[in-house]
Every structure is written in C-alpha cells, then in structure tokens.
Amino acid sequence: MEKPLHYPVVVIGSGPIGLTLTNLLGIHGVGTAIVERNRLTVQEPRAVSIDDESLRTLQNVGVVEAVLHHVVAGYGSIYYGPSRKPFAKVEPTGRPYGYPRRNAFRQPILEQQLRDALARFPHVETFYGWDLIDHGQDAERVTLRLKGPDGQRRSVTCDYLVGCDGASSRVREGLGIQLAGTTFEERWLILDLEGNRNTTKHTEVFCDRRRPCITLPGPDDTRRYEFKLLPGETDAELLDPAMVARLLATHGADPAATLRRKVVYRFHARSAPEWSSGRVFLAGDAAHLTPPFAGQGMNSGLRDAQNLAWKLAAVLRGQLGSSLLATYQQERKDHLWQMIQLALRMGRVMAPRGVLHGLATRAFFHALNVWPAARDYVAQMKYKPSPYFASGFLVGGGSRGLVGRLLSQPEVAGPDGTRMLLDEALGPGFALLVRTADPQSAFARLDQPVWAALGARRVALLPEGTTGGEAPDGSFVAVHEVTPLLAGQLPPDQAVLLRPDRYVAATIPLAEAAAVAAKVEALVDGTWPASRPNQVLLVRPEQARETAAAA
Image (cartoon, rainbow, N blue to C red):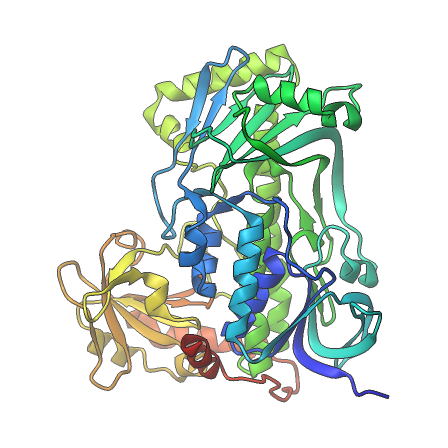
C-alpha cells in the first residue's frame, strides 16, 4: 500500500480564505498542502468588498501592491430615499490600518494572485482538481482520503486540518457540526456588469420598500447591482432578460455594459457553535455566514486566517503549546457576531419594513446631520465594530486600553529614510515596539528572556523630527512616525508586545518590564500541556522568508 503523504497542515478549499491562510503559513515556514476540488480558482464575480484590515493582511502576505492595481480604493456610500434624494453619506477618510476603509475588488483576480504567490514556497504543495472524500482523526494526526481529477485515490495525513471549503463544508459535515442561526426568506437578485461606463465611485443604496436596490462600484469597468425580490415574485421572473433590462434601466445602469453574471440568493446569519474539534478547524464560510449588507463576509474570513495562521505555526514550531489553539474561536467569535449584527442593522436601513419605518429612518439620519459629531460618526464609519477581544492570548487588558486591540499602522521612515508602513519594520513574527528617544536604554530594560523565547523583533518608535537607525549590534531597529497615528495610543517609555497578527498582547511600562514579563511567561506556560510535543515544522520561518524574498 502506498504510504500516505504527511503535512503539518492541510487546508481544504482555495477561495480567498484558504489561499490567504496557506500563504501566511508559507511565510511562517509551515509545510502545507492546499486541496481544491476545482481545477481553477473561481472565474465568476463573488465577493466585491475588501476593507482596510483585509488589505493589511494581504500586505503581510506580500501581495497587496499587486492587489491594489485591481481595486477601487476608498469609495463611500450614498443612501437615497424613495424620491431619490440622499439622506445619509458614508465617506471615511481615515486610514487607521494603513489603507482606505472601503474598497472594491474582483475575487477572480485576487484568487489567482494568491494562488500564484504560493509558488514562492517550496514547502507548500497544491492539489487542484482533488476532492475530499472524508477525514478522521486520533490523538496524533488527521487522516484524509482524497479523490484526484482522474479518479485516483490518495491518503494524506496531517497534524492539523483547516476547512475553508465554504457554506456546504465537507470538513464541517465530517465533524457533525451544523451552522446555527437564521436563513432569511427574502431573496436578492445579483447582476454583475462588465464594460460598464457608469463612473460613480460610491455605492448607491436606494432605500425604497417598493424595490430596495444597491449598486456597487468595481475595478476594471465592472459594477454590481442587487435588487430585492418582492413577495410573490419567482426567481425565474427576476432572471428573465426583459426584467433584468428593466431593473437596470431604472437605476442608471450603462445599457452598453455586458451582463457577466446573474443569480438569486438568500442571505444567512449563521455561525457554527464550535469552530474546531480536536485537530480540525473551520474558517470563513465553513464557520460562519454573514449577511451581505456590511460587506464583511469575506473580510471576516480573512480575520480568521490571520488569527489562526500564526497560532498553528507557533504550536508546530514548539514555540507555544497546543492550548493556544483554543483561543482561535475565543478571540474571533464575539467580533464575528458583532459584524453579523451590523449587517442586519444596515439591511434594515436599506429595506424598510414599511412607510413609517422608512420615514423614521430618514428622519433619524437627518437629525444626525445637524450634530457634527454624530454626522462624523456615520461618515467616518465609526459605527463599525473595532477589532478587539477581551480574552485570549493576552495579558490584562480592558475595553479602553490597547491590549486586545489591532494596533494602528502608521507610515514610518526607516534607517535610510525610506518610508514604509509599520508592519514592514515589525516583520512577520512577534515584536516589541517601544516609544522612546533612547532605544539603547529602553531595550536594556527589556532584557527578560521571554521576549527572546518568543522571537520578538525589537523596534523603537523615535520622537518626531528624529531619524531612524539600527543598533550597532543589530539588536533593534529604530523608525519614526510619518503619520502620527500612535501618538495618542503609545505613551513615551512604554512598549507593547505585538503578536504576529498585530494585536497587542501586553502593554509594558518600562518601569514595570520585569513584572509584565513574568505575566507573559505565565501566559506562555499556560499554553503547554503536561508533556511537550516534538517540533514538526518542516521549515524555519527565517528560511521561508529568505526563500520567498529570493523567488
């Protein structure tokens, strides 16, 4: 019998979530196989909105510059009443994480870019055209049976399996886990146009109970229109070419554009009660389904990938214990549910239940426009739940502090004056970031062994007007802020321990460095079971980075 192939991680599904997770694992040096039942990446438009957090993740993956060539960056939303008069505008201008907050993209292009990026990693293998038959696990490994494009069968084993295989996940089915929540009766018609000459940059939302509609901009002369089906209408009626043409004409669509895709869908607000079982994990639509109105379905999945990738790498490397993996759902699930609730609220604005509901909604927003702070709350998207978790792999915290929050990403200037976003200076692993005018002295006080055990890179944030530099012995790098996003967050002579996903694990006043280090040591020790497993990582992270850079 043919000996099964073995990988530290196998990812099932090569949509944006699976491909992003595999790229992140590749960067962390983890031997990974990605399995996809189709021979190609997706060819039709699906997700169309990508936010600033996701672009930051793609920056960490190393593909963001290529992705931005096919993105409409920084678009807003205009909400219209039945008379087609605007009553609310969302036009965020801030870049707290280094990128515009709302952006449009093309999923087929993104998936191909992410697939191409895997060629950097000799320790990553792809299985396109292979389907998962079933999987099982014991205390030591997961065993999968795969069926190839020509009907051949193969057994594969792995230390961890991640199902990124969508709403009808076979991985989730194999675990006996069902999504809990609601599937809504209302249906929406999606129309994707190519060769479109409608140059309106913003999303237009027509909040008319008679026929709610939203139209979204896209790159490369594409545009999407979505129309709600009314009670009594059938899918076939709305998909009829004459009806499609009539609907598009009533909302200013370019009559010369080509209809690339039309489909009717129901939306869902569902989540799996458990996102993992033993050595098997779920991510993206396999774990949760989000209504489309906030554009957070794929973005929520990319948060899953960013959260899970470094944890799998740290466990496989023997850097942290396997109990760390329990923090995946712990950290992600509450924020995911907040995003689902946001989408439902936005859906109620878009599709008022009746005349009075619509009037009340518009009156509410008109009242907000009178008060500058309230108007700014809407325009700058401050209503969007910020990325935060109260418990998990962190020390202390509190709703008003930095711990458990995604650190802002300013533009900084490096040792030679080159400008970059902060994550480029921090590197892909843990990092110690300290605001100080005297890096040598500051890092001398941060000499506790736990920072080296975590492989934390040392980065000093110098006061405005100074230039960056490196330590003579290469033990730290110093940069200064070009865009002062951290001035109000990180006080002088305080450091933060940043996780590889750029969430703050601990704040460290230099005068209390030893005490905080002891708490971090306890946090690290708490991830270990009674006996420590052997390291199974195939490639060290520094080797992976060198290989990827040379590719």
